[in-house]
Length: 183
Image (cartoon, rainbow, N blue to C red; front, side, top):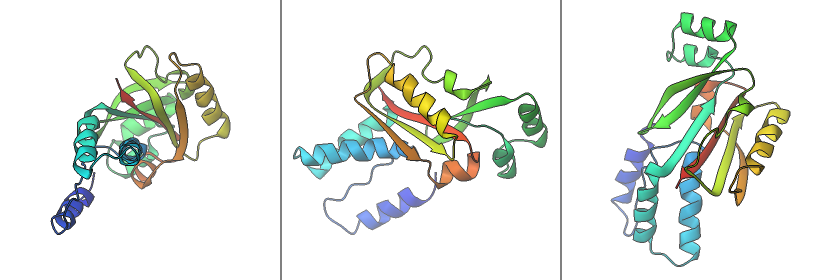
């Protein structure tokens, strides 16, 4: 998503036993990998083992964000004025997913976004999931938590975080995402 990965690789060349993982993700998608790496380090894994496992897992991280409005996507040049106006007038909630290291729109929803998360999914690893948002209504965040608590099998850990700068600047307020690993 930026030159941070290349800069980290350049810096790592000057050090021994430093490995840089290209998370191919953002926000809490990176956090899933960081937490996995920390758990492995506590268990005594080497830096190289942690690097290899986190690199392998990058393809299993899934991030999807549902936007309230398209104003910020339009301001950033990521959608046309007509698309923005149509979506806003029809109260469409576009879903932005991170795939292959890039943000892309996938589905569009109408109404409250809290009703569509994980619908029909049986490939979700129930170990850990993040709810990440940009200044969402606390009632919406709580409703999403309650839906996730009903997930079968149940999640071992549900974490709530504020979205990072990339999601916040491109998607605007009242954007809510879930980030997890696939089985």
